[in-house]
Length: 325
Ligand code: LMR
Image 1 (cartoon, rainbow, N blue to C red):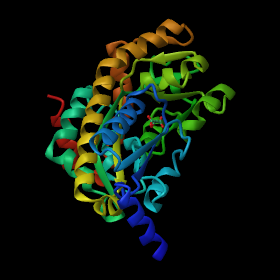
Image 2 (spheres, protein in one colour; image 1 turned 180 degrees about the horizontal axis):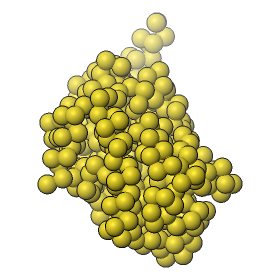
Image 3 (cartoon, helix red, strand yellow; image 1 turned 30 degrees about the vertical axis):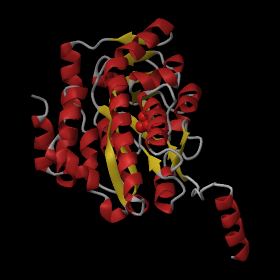
């Protein structure tokens, strides 16, 4: 104590004011830097440290370096990481309502997803896990999902008997079962290996995830199915967040809103570019599905809606459909 006082007065005498150490904020995610989420996380670091100089230090960990799927949510609740942005398909343990985003062929495109997220019903979901200690800071886009496999899948019957890697979502599991395929829940960090070694035959993902993780190099065909969406909720530990000084909280929220917008612009405008890179790499064949084929996929997968209507809520599904304009 005495020593501290002496030190403080010595610093004061030198004209150095005692500055508290910055709050360290760990932001962990599972994708590459060169994706909408990766770019958004780096932008958040830049903006948060600009708006709160000396007050915060943001450390970004991409590619499941710090925590992968399965561990990151627990780590957030334990305080080992402060911000994560899991795909909306990874919240099943905490809420059933977010399963809405996994319903096949619910949203026409990413703009419809955006409208639903901005709606009263979509915004209410951000605080739907507060009793579990999880606070949603915002939604973030990636994009629509494409199917990939070891062979072309024009018709749902072509998927019969194939093994598909899926995110840990019961809705997605039901979606693949509906076409006679065998879904397997696997962490994102294990997908490339599983495809390469033949543990699974196919998967579903966005163009940026496919390209940045080289899935196109270990798949024969990618179908432009756009049958669902991979988007994120950026979340934090609500106890930690509520304990932050108000000015820090406000600065972080501003940085978060702006970094999400930055990432969303990349997601919306850059998806075609990622697709073009996959085509140019000339590894997997990229196949357009005819209107008829798409209608067959839709018809085969649609019964999944009824199956989960009770857990998700019919009204919420209606609100999401209304976003299709
Ligand atoms: C996946 O597991 O395929 C995606 O959710 C990964 C991600 O975060 O985009």
